[in-house]
Length: 118
Image 1 (cartoon, rainbow, N blue to C red):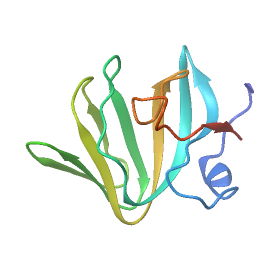
Image 2 (tube, one colour):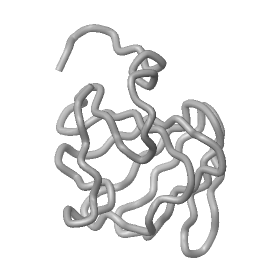
Image 3 (tube, rainbow, N blue to C red):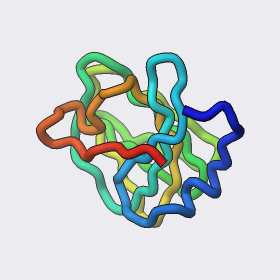
């Protein structure tokens, strides 16, 4: 990974697909990623790790089985490990995600979207 500054706006401008995380840096043993979201993602959970969401633009609703958490720009939420959740974006949302290296974005390698470095 690079030791240069990372421009999130520039990185987000390089792709258009939704729910396809792009690795932009590493932090300890974690991937730092940007993703564009629109529509509903799958219900899922991560048995071994928390799930970190930071909204850069737009509004994201994270549905939990007992409540919804609504996030706007500059707000973050950490879904505790083992908690089933579903991110939903009624309009396009830009997010910063942090996950352990190799962690499938659905918590299950069989259903996960591959992460690419940009």
